[in-house]
Each structure stands twice: as C-alpha cells, then as structure tokens.
Length: 251
Image: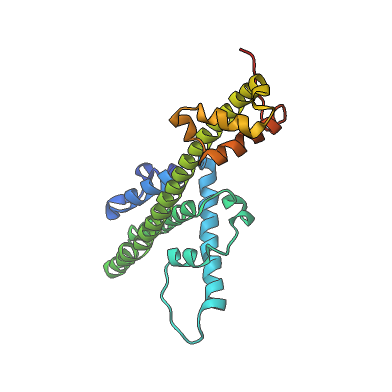
C-alpha cells in the first residue's frame, strides 16, 4: 500500500512496519490535533509545501547565514525557527492560512513520512544485514528524533497561542461587560435628565453627579470615580440619538 499522508495521519491502516517506530503514532496524533483545521485533501499538498519550505530555508541558510569555513549542526525545526520571524507564509498557497505551530506539526509529519519510506528498504532482500542495520540506525536515531523535536516545538507554540487567545477572549468579555453596563447607565441617565433637567437648571454636570450618587455601589464600580462618571454620562447625552447610543425611553 502506498503512503498517503496517513489518511490524515492515521498510519494504522498503512502497510508500514510501525512496530519499528514506537514514537510515530504518538507524534502523528499530536500533529493531527494541531492541524485539525485542515481538510483531508489539504494535508498532502501542505506536507509537500512544508518539505519544500524546509529545503528552501536550508539553501538560504547555507548560502547567506553560514559563516565561511564553519561547520554548523542544525535540524529542520531549528531552520524553521531561524526564519519564521521574517518569512511570510501567505506567499505559499498551501500554507497561506497555516499558523507556525501547524507548520511545525506538518514538518513532523513530513519527517515521519520520510522515515517510513526508509523502512521500505529494510524489506529489500538485496540489502545485506549490515546495510539493513545501518538503515535502521539512521531511521531510529535521525528523522524520528527530528520529528519529535518539531512536534515538541509545535505543541509549545500551540499552547502559547491558545493561552493568548484565552486571555484575549477574557479581556474582550470584560470590556464588553463594562461597555454594556456603561451604555445601560447612559440610557438611564438620558431618561433621568429629561425628567429632571429643570430641577438642575438644565446643568448636565449637576444632573450627572446627582444621578451618580443615586447608583448602587456595583453600578458606581462601572466608573473609575465620580469625575469619570460625570464625563461619561454627559457624553451620553451628546451621543443620544446618534449611532453611538440608541436608547428606548419608553416605560
């Protein structure tokens, strides 16, 4: 059976001696979780693109970044990390909507794919036992180790992004709650002012201070202090009827 990127990383159905690679299934399950936004048909071209991207970075690194006459050891994950801050993924159609955590996960899958293809050679009876042993050592100690590094980086960035999203959502919710409470009080103040304008000599600030003092402690907490409340409430009067503040004063 030919290797298709694992029926979206389900390698159990492929004719590959997975018993030789105890980490493959673990790595690919992690990769699947991180790339769950991808459709099945998008995985193969995405993996091919990340493989090409890695090779591109490798050539660029060798030509422009590597000091002359200096030997540097690097891994695919290290190359991605080196260029990720300056490279624009949107220029690659198959990765245009991918995140860097997803790129690392796809890289891990690409490396596992390469590793599994190497395993096919072990079945070739034309190879000597010594040659097969050499292939196996290369497999177990090389590409899978690099794939593990890539998926570890993917998970780290993925969790970082999730934490940022969580904090952003919490902040947005808090702002929305404060905004809703503030607008509700503005509308209440509009009604209060229209009913009591003469009592306060049509002075918006005096009316706003009186309104603020009538609020509960929880309602007052919507504002930093009385001065802030007066400024916000009087602005509500100016905004009343405009796009910024629509109020229904019907009772």
